[in-house]
Image 1: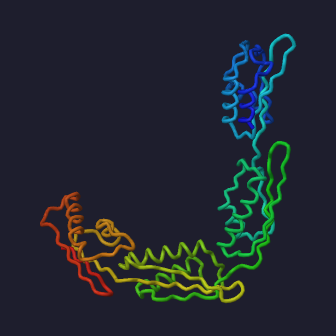
Image 2 (image 1 turned 120 degrees about the vertical axis):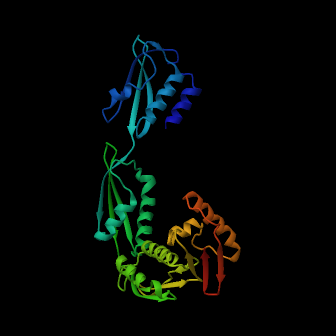
Image 3 (image 1 turned 60 degrees about the vertical axis):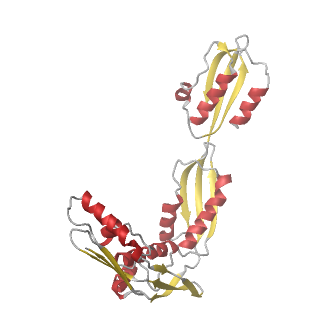
Length: 323
């Protein structure tokens, strides 16, 4: 709206051009006229300057969350003109209320929707996106049949009250969990991880939580030496609102690192050698690893013969020996 006004000022030649500005005022519903007036640059007692008016319009528009800033010019009988800036505030969220949503779903939506009190919110533009966001979040957390309706109450002060009406329907739950090709070394650790995350038969299916589970299982496999491990979590619907989860692992070869002191162990050694999950280590990496170890020894003040790295590979095991 401010841009349209500027164009009209820029291209028209109205009666007030060159008139003396003897009064300037701001009309704002918030009562902040005095504070905003200090931002204006057009002087009193000078001819109306369209360039300064444009600057003041832009300054006011950027000074707050305003829906529009309009300037009107009123004649003062025999005494020049009066510039009046009329400010309309942008609509802001005053209250958010959930109706029908279970407490667990309400907490999830509250944390993910980012509907903050005082936030600028244009209902005509954002209601549809908000409804879609609620359905998407619900589906990822196991509520696949959410019915959503958002009611908006908007008062004259541009305060928006939102009521989120949600009918959750039946929740998608796990009918069982199957572990396939999971190395025995991480079997118990994975079962404890499932218990800690609340993923068991009869639990609600959360796609987001399953994605985190996949990453955590792979991290544990890498720590144990299965650097090339791949983890898949196919979820198959076996009946209405019941799904079977399979944790399927392709571990790849086990990597065994035999390194003498003072070299670090575990993840620190992987970082030293610049090895990351999914890397494929071959005999051709021996020289690169020797250079990495030699530089580490120099940086840490260890003096000695250059390190020697040998790599032995079998279909199921790769041994990296560092001397």
